Image (cartoon, rainbow, N blue to C red; front, side):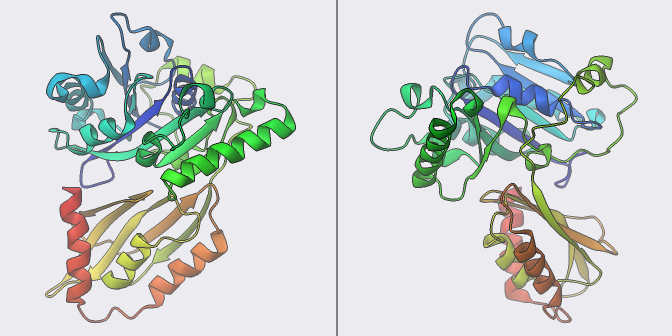
Length: 342
């Protein structure tokens, strides 16, 4: 279900031709209980990639004849997002697999400023082919600008390289990404097998009744539940209101290795308590009001390289800050992120 005031998170999969985007997409489609919409973009007249996408797709919108970021007025993408964001579909997320020539910066801008009110940008996942990358994408002295747009970088195909060369290539790719984007989350994964928790939340761990049978068959394939780039997490139940100042400090300066922070909180307002949904992905902070403040809230920090002990201490420190009286400056800071999320 949408987790941000009714808005469905839209995650863009970007990367060069043959980088492994479809493999990653198919891996995500195998998540039990996830309801995913998919936009498959193909640069050409025939949607070859759409025919290759298998698994659980509640409704697919294939865009023909052009790159997402080149469509006039973003009409093609907005039309697909409008179709998939219908509340009746109850999607957990929409995944946009872009063409190999798409510019991640432009794709992110199209989603962020989409004319569809029911969606929000949920992240940009850049897939890198460790074997061919420095011959096809990163070929100049300065790192490519596309690195700057990524919230999550997945380095794939490194298993095709020998040990020493593999380690050197992974380090080199990571160093180049960090030069352009120090905050990007970087994971190494064979055949796109990352922990789905880095990308989206499934509303249920159970398989929906109307799921495509093929999805279950795919999940039963040998080895599909192994060799993942696993995420680590830290969490805390919040039985009392939190300080909005301390909360924003946490969101703006997350614990080491935290790629996502999510949850529900309540804070004291001038007249009554207020509830908020919190979603942080990389550098993006989304805050949305809840109809009612939660009786018991929670916050979870997630990351492939998360320092879970440090993260746990940060969450506990947030809960320990006195929040018995309204904090007007903190509320204004929190409200600023609510406005940016609208």
